[in-house]
Length: 166
Image 1 (cartoon, helix red, strand yellow):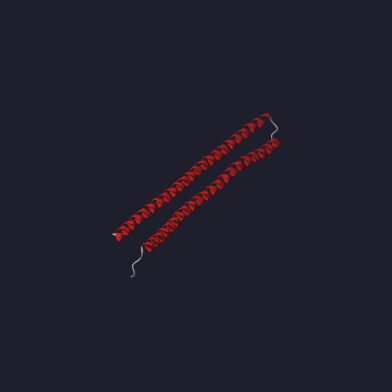
Image 2 (tube, rainbow, N blue to C red):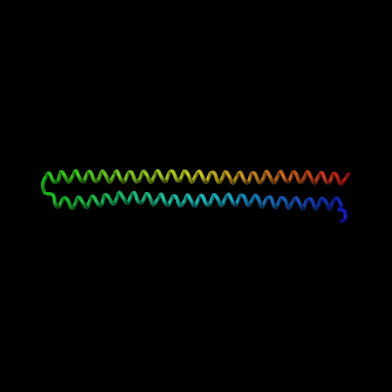
């Protein structure tokens, strides 16, 4: 093998360093893209959760409206059949009880839906924050490793150059 001149060695070392930098940059971009992909998946999960919460809310409203409609029908049917004062009083009590029960049921369903939605939203936000933090850590670690390797390679190259000069 023919010996290289100093200029040739420097050129070769610079080419190698440039290749290492490009490869390190590619690895860094890959880690960043993976973190972005995880964050997008979390966003999609959160959006699905929001749709579910909306559906639960609609069910609660439907329950309340349905109970009110049912109560209205019962009232109209009962008033036709009732002609005495005691019958009207009994009917009034029954209607009030039914309305109260329907309101209680509707309130309970709405609160449960809100609680579930809040809980799932918090969980999703925590997961997104964690994914973001992990991605940043990975990028930072890859950068540190790359810089450390670059320093090591540079020191080794300088030692070789120095040993070849002497």
